[in-house]
Length: 297
Image (tube, rainbow, N blue to C red):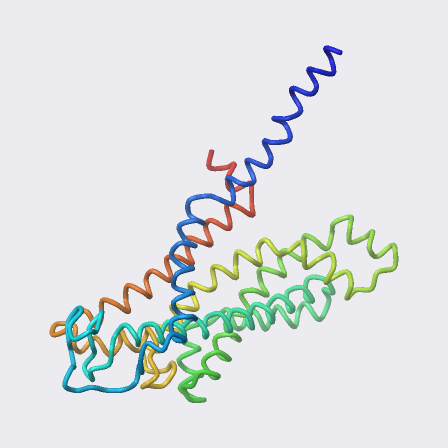
């Protein structure tokens, strides 16, 4: 009897400790702070335009360059009398649409290419990875500028170009992870029981490369936000008068001394969004890879 009592006393903390450690990893400071920055902006971007706040394009020259809170305009107005807050909300939605769709398409293409190259190897791997290397040689922003200047600036073109330019990054990362996972015993066991290659890739390989995939997806969100803003800043993004954070910052350059708030507000939103995504990436890395957390102790 004393022995059984001792075993019951010691079993509880042993089973509880892993759960506490897991919860602590997911509640790490950077992930929580990143989500606190990103989630409100996501809600503002997608729900805000549905609230009928006003027309972001309608001009009102008599109320141009108003300051903070003047004449009912919470964040002031631009050089054409358009409400800055309304334009930021709509511009944020446009930037988020470009970012999320581009990352989804680019991630899907790159992940598929990386899985196929790492699993089948041979000539298919050589073809895919040489194309990936060719894309990675040139800076993304320079290629985007060249291509969009040639095919024209529009929302679909912007999404298409960014998607194709970020796909090689995913392909390179997933290819490296697939090479490691494809040598593990469970893959050989799946082959031994007669699983088809497609089933092995989808059921066994893909779930085992999700950690680097999720981290890269989150990391790419912040980078694509900057790429989209940079292209819009250069006049190669969504054509005016449709607002985006990038073209709002670009327009505000000419009024930064007369109406500095025109530049301050969209810049703050853009910086907060990128910072939130980057902090979320760091937090996800700590949560999904226990080795990172343990190495910091």
